[in-house]
Length: 141
Image 1 (cartoon, one colour):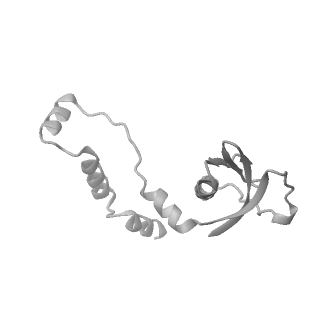
Image 2 (cartoon, helix red, strand yellow):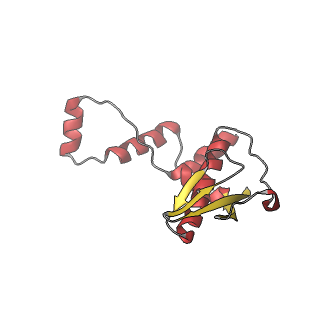
C-alpha cells in the first residue's frame, strides 16, 4: 500500500523538527532539509508499520490546504510504499535470550559454534520451513 501524508517541517536554528498532524506521536528531526526529509520517510514508515501490526485504523491524510502554518513552518508531502518496508522489517534480526547447560555452552564455544545460525537452522527444520516466503505460503493453506 502507498501512503502519502503531509508533514510539518518546523525550521529552527538547531535544525528541522518534523511532525505528522494526522499521526499522533510521529515525530522526528533533521539537521538540514535533506536529513529531515529522509528521517520523515523513515518515521512515517515505522509509525504506519506499527499501526498495521497493531491493527489500528489508519487515518485519512489531511489536505495540505487545510493545514494552518506558522511563519517558520512548511508542509511537505511524504510518501512511503509499504511492501518493501514490510519485507525489510520481517528480515530484521530479533534478539532472543535462551538457557542451555554450561557444559553444552562450553563445548559449543570450543567448537566455535555460531549459536544464531544453529538456532535458525534448527527452527527451520522443526517448523518445516526454508525461508520467510515458505512460511507465509504455509499460512495461506
